[in-house]
Amino acid sequence: MVRLLLLFFFLSGALLSAQADSARFDANFRFAEGIYFSHASLLANQPDLGWEAIDGEMVQLPEDFKVQIANYGYKDVRINQGIIPYAISLDGKPYFFVRHDQKRQFHEFTGLRVHGLLSTLQYDTTIQTRQLMKAYNPANGQPFRQAWVEREKTLRLHRILHLRSGARLPFTQENILKLCADDKDLTEALMKQEKTEESLLLRAVRLYDDRHFLNLPLR
Image (cartoon, rainbow, N blue to C red; front, side):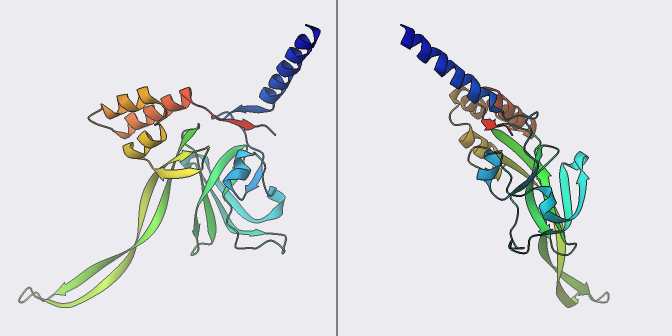
C-alpha cells in the first residue's frame, strides 16, 4: 500500500511538472526571442540564433502582421549567408519567412492571424506577367506594331498552417476538410454547407482549434 501511494505521488508530480513546462499554443503563447532555421526548432521553442547574431535594419508593421528586415545577414562569417530563416520571434510572436525582395534587399516575414493547431496567414507575393501590347493604325484599324510587355503583379495569398506538421496549404474548403478529418462532426457540418465563404471557413478553423490543441514547451 505504501509503495502504491509513493508511486501515485511520483506520477502525479511528474505530470504536474510536465504540464508546468509546456502550454497550449494560442494567441497568448510566447516563443523565445530569436531566429529559427526550421519548423522543428520552432516546435521545440528553441531559436537557433539570438537577435544579436544578425545584421540588418528591422521595420515592424503590426497592423499588417508584417516584419521586414533590410540587408539581412549573419555577423558570424562561418555561417552561410545564404541560409534563409524559417521564422523569427519578435516580442514572443512568431513571424514566418515569406519572401526575399532582391530589388529592395529585404527579407519579409508574416505573422499569424489565427493561432492554434490550425493557424492562418495572409501575405502578398509578386509575380511577373506578360501581356501582348499592340499599336493600331488609326486609318485602317489594323495593328502595325506589337510587343510583349512584362509587368509585376501583386497577389494576396491566404494560407492555413498545420502547426504540428508544418504543412502550409492554400486556405480552401478542400484543404480544411483534409486537415480537420479527425473531427467527424465538424467535417460533416462543413460539407453540408452550400456556400463556404471565408468567414464560415474561419469559424470552422477556430472551432477545430477549440477542440484540438497543441502543447509547446515554455522557455
